[in-house]
Image (cartoon, rainbow, N blue to C red; front, side, top):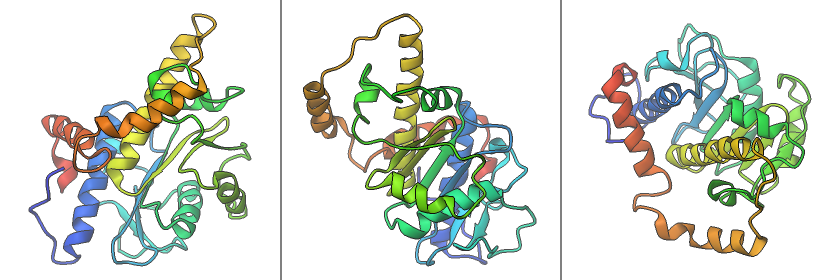
Length: 253
């Protein structure tokens, strides 16, 4: 995404840029059909503000999110601006524990896509049966379903079950991915969503051909050779933002 030209006198240039990038991501998710009524969350840490992060206003559809209406909260859930919208407790509880404990979790994405929820509910989870799945084999954590995530004490188990992974299936619940940048988190989600969609289509036809472990290892080793310069997901995300702009540019406001 190109650097925003517009600035705001009531916030730093870095915050406004983070707001625009996050708002664009919500619109991309809406365009791709990864929205879920007014639920699910994408959060981003604010640079140079210890513990502060941005989250979507509870009550708005992803297609209604703008840079200006994102809610700024601290790690304890206190609002840091005069935004009139509430924050979904489930979103805060889940995302804040990772933002608090993981320094590299700049962007966190949680969705309830049909394919993601289906694979999260499947015994064995994601299987090595397609190109995109090979990106993730051995790199996915799993967390058992405990009900809606509104109890802070579940955070300890979320962190423990995540371990050193940055992709997790919340079993019977959905997808959770994290990235050092928003574009990195985006491309992880895009690739995992594709892996889930293709797995569902494949298994519906019968027994799948499983890719051997040694081939998965070669695939993961060589993935960096097909990345475009600029960092993981940067070009991919920018392309999606250009598509969004053809539909509606109000996310920039």
